Amino acid sequence: MSDRLSVSLGSVRLKNPVIPASGTFGFGEEMAALYDLNCLGAISFKGTTREARYGNPLPRIAECGNYGMINAVGLQNPGIDEVIEKQLPMLERLYSGPIIANVSGFSVDDYCYVCGKLDAKERVSIIEVNISCPNVHNGGMAFGTTPEAAAEVTRAVRKVTNKPIYIKLSPNVTDIVSIARACVDAGADGLCLINTVLGMRIDIRRRRPVIANRYGGYSGRGIFPIALRMVNQVAVALNRQVPIIGCGGIETAEDVVEMMMAGASAVEVGAANLHNPMACPEIIDRLPALLDELKIQQIQDITGCCLS
Ligand SMILES: Cc1cc2nc3c(=O)[nH]c(=O)nc-3n(C[C@H](O)[C@H](O)[C@H](O)COP(=O)(O)O)c2cc1C
Image (cartoon, rainbow, N blue to C red; front, side, top):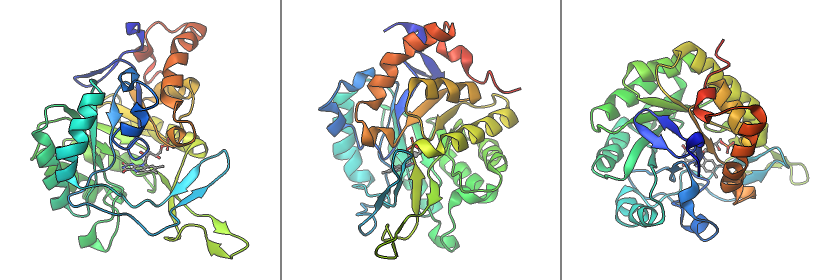
């Protein structure tokens, strides 16, 4: 593959900007049965917590036609010890590129514990800290909803690892820029946005919410314009201070280019993997012809061309 697709996230070099998003790719095992994972720019693995979690009660998925889906999976994962013992070594065998470790927590201590353990893992290139999780010590309000709580998590994890820390922001806020800025001021090396948008569906025949937990995270095609707007707002405000991974509703090579023009250095593809497991390799295959069509030599040159 030609080098024209390569991009960098700080000191981490990616052969192309396409990364499967956390929670939509597990630890790569199922997808590796369908294609060679080494075509991917990087891989963000399933949100990992201190203890194993079995997730929320069923049903926890609501379909939304071709504009997306709602999930309330509830961070089901085997816990950091098993991830380090089993899933990470397996992923390392299947994939030789940069691994992004996605971390979730319910207290600042939880985040530090998991990030501290990942710090020792050579093949983890970036730690992506998901702050859309509820803080059990603060009435369950998500860390990502105030600049103070977002900065507190960032400062704390900064102390336990030298690896690049990317804070993954929640879109369920009034002012994403103030939260992004607080994370960068507290020591984040980069940002990833957006996580899912809070949503709901009702089964009109049963007159009940489709999802057992009532609300869930809306992802897929329908959130692309929201994600694009938020990436652009943050990119304009921070003016290239840190790299941004753009995420939300990306399904095509055209979406990748658009998200990079908005200010992203790389992108994550989430829900698209669930309805088309070949989404990532198909996007990567299509990119060179699209760059030709748009007369773009190097894909990395388009990052942030719409900042002003
Ligand atoms: C089933 C499912 C599970 C997810 N699990 C996680 C997770 O563990 N950690 C995380 O940071 N984001 C998680 N996400 C959010 C995605 O990584 C992504 O930010 C979001 O879905 C928006 O991208 P998309 O529209 O391309 O799906 C999950 C999304 C889905 C659909």
